[in-house]
Length: 628
Image (tube, rainbow, N blue to C red; front, side):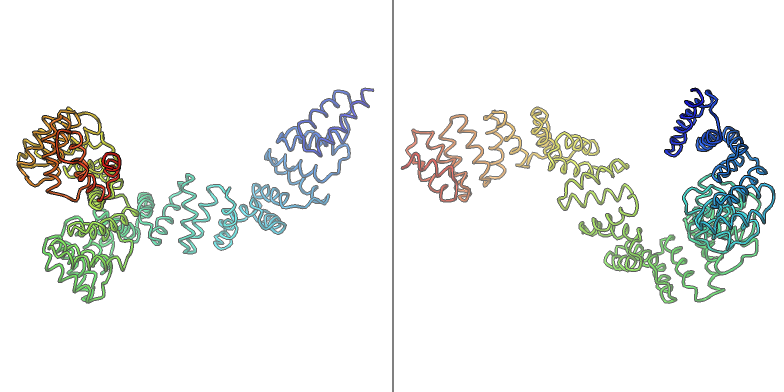
C-alpha cells in the first residue's frame, strides 16, 4: 500500500504543479519519496517546482534524474538550462538550451540566455546572433536588446546602440550602465537632448565615469543648462580634460548664471588659450562690469567696438557701466545708441527704465518697463522695478498686479513683501495685507508702519490680541504716536482689559491735548465702566474743543440721563437735535428723556413723531403706545 499511496501524492503533486502551487508540489513529492514511490513524473514535477522556487541546485538534481529516466519535456530542459545559467555553468546551460530548442521550445528567453553564455565565453559574434534571434522573436525583449546594444557600443555603432539601448531605457528597469553608454552614444551623434536625458539618469544612479561628465557638461551647455554644465565641466577639467572649449563653455555658463567672478576667470583662461575673439572680449567685459571692474569692462567693450563698430551689445553694456557710475544721462545715450544698432531687448528697456526711475522720471520709466515686459512677459526684474515705481507713484492696484506676478516666478525680497502688504492695506484687503506684512516682518523689515498697518488689519479681522502685539511693536520703534495708543486702547476694550485701555487713552491725551477725538474715546470707555461723571467731563472737553459736535452733546446727554439728571440730559439732547436734526436716534432719545423726566411740561410725543417720520421704528412704537 505504501507505493500506491505514494503514487497518489505524485499525482496530486502534478495537479498542484498545474495550479502553480509549487510549495505543495515539493511537499507531496517529498512524501512520495519517503514511500519509495519516485518515478520520472515525480522528479520532473519537483525539479520544475524547484525551478520556480529559484532553488537552482535542487532543480538540476531532480531534472537530471527525470531526464535519465526518459523525460523529453522541452520545458524541463529549458528549466535545467536556466538553472545552470544561474549557477554560471555556461557550458551545460548551452547544452540544455540546444536540447530545449531541439524539442520544439523556441522562445526569446532561450536565445537570450544562450547569448549571455556565449558572451561570457568571448563569443561576441555568436552572442550578437543569439540576441538578434531573440529580438526577431520578440522585438521588445529587453534583456536581448540590452545585450545587443552593449555589443553595438563596443563596435562604436552609435546608431545601432541608441536604437537597442533606447528601447531598454524606456522599459523603466534599466541599470546605470545602460543609461551611461546610451548617453555617450547620443553625444557622439550630437543629439544633446537625448544625451542629457540618458546621462542625467545614469549619474543620478551613481555613475562616476568622467567621460560621462565631460559629455553631459558640453551637452548641458548647448542646451542652456548652465549650472549643470559648470558642475560637469569642472569634474572633467579636474580629470585632465583641459581644452579652450571647456574653459569657454564653463565661463559662458558661469556668465549665464551671473557668477561673474568665475566667468571672468574662465574667460581669461580661454583668451590665454587663443580665444581672442569679439565674443570673448565682449562677454569678459560684461563679467568684469558685474564684479565692479567697471573701467576694465569699458576697455573690453572698447576693444569689442574697435573689432566690430556696430556691436550694439557693446554699447548696451557700456551703458550699464555708465549706469553703475551713476552717470544716468550718458547711460541713456548709450542705450539709445544700442537701440540704433538693433539691440531691442527686455534688458535694455528695463535698465533704461531704471535709470529714468532713479532720475524720478516715473512715467517715462513705466513706459520702458512696459516695453521690457512686452518683449519678455515673464521678466522678473521688470515686474519688480515697475512695481516699486508704481509704489513711488502711490498706484497701489498696479503694485499688487506686478508684485504678485513676480511672486509666481520667485520668492520676493522682504522689502517687496512690505510694498505688497502696504498696497493691500491701502486697498482694504486686510487678510492679504496681514499675509504679506507677516512675510516682510519675518524677513527683517522692522518699520513702524509695517507693524501699525498689520495691527489695523488685525483689528478689521477682529484679531485683537494680535493687533495689540503689533501696536506695541510699532510704539517700541516710535513711542510718540497718539493714534497708536488710541487704537491699541480700542483693542484692549475688545479684550475687556479696560485698565490698559484707559492707560493708553490717557497717554494719547498727553501727546495730543487739543484733539477732541482722544477725549471722546476716553468718554466712551468711562461710559462702559459706568463712570458717567468722568464720561460727562470728557464729553464736555470735546464740546469745549468743538462746540458744534452734535454727537458729543447727545452722548453727554446720555450720561446725564443715566445719572438721572434729566433736565441737563434734555438740554444736551435738544442741542444735539438742533445741531443735527437728521438723526432720528437723537430725536428718539430726546423724547425718551422727556418721558422719563415726567416733571417736564414738554411733550415727548412730538419728538417721537419726528423720529418716526425719519424711519425710527422704536420711536414709532413709543408714539403708538404712549401718545394715542
